[in-house]
Length: 245
Ligand code: SAM
Image 1: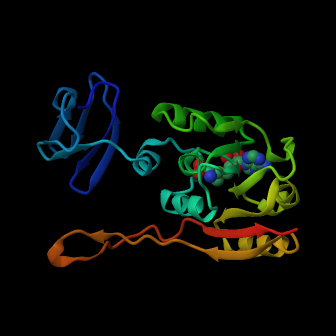
Image 2: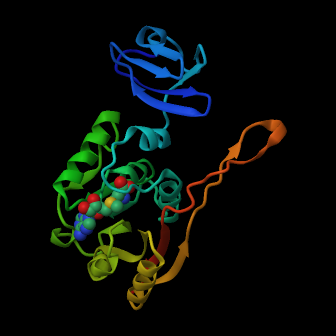
Image 3: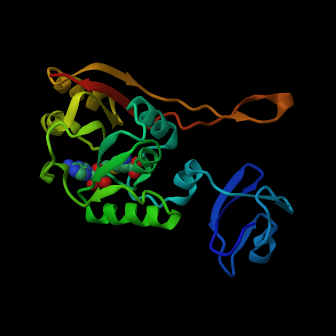
């Protein structure tokens, strides 16, 4: 049953809204109105007028609930990243920069210990408030610190992911703090950055792959099944590699 304070995912046709159920809540879409008293006490999956009521998944929380002041890593990339890094509950993973905390959320679900570093105080606070709002990342070790300032043991991490503009400046330190053979990943928006990274990985990391993930949604009319006209055609290139000795 939905109660005051819960987050609910409201689906109206092809529109989705993630809202907190507080007194005075109301949602207007076209001529339809959904009010607080229409939702409280209803079960998940209920239909009120043309509104369907659900509890949001982590993917939906990140997409519709998180406040963003940075570019985030989209769930389509984040879940793939977590699996490709080989995460499980026994693994300790390093991340920088934290940004709005989107990737950290996925790493913390699939990995064991997550250590994340964010240089900007503004973005660090934003990530904390996103996690707190939805009760996420409670075990994450977070630091408002430039990764280069962090004092870390050598060969400490099982995996790492780096989402900063010029990751090649950090490769020597990354190499030091990763265990032998550990997987490391990067997200970069342009091919020029990917080329520069590839040149700089040589001698420190090997088993390199570069890929991108394209999601194409379909219109769900069973008699006229076909792709949507528009898609998010580019988020970033993913680069994965392994530490060599
Ligand atoms: N992956 C994040 C997410 O999914 O929400 C978004 C990361 S955002 C694109 C890049 C972040 O890296 C910025 O917030 C920036 O302040 C941070 N950053 C840049 N250089 C850094 C460094 N050397 N150490 C820690 N954070 C850094």
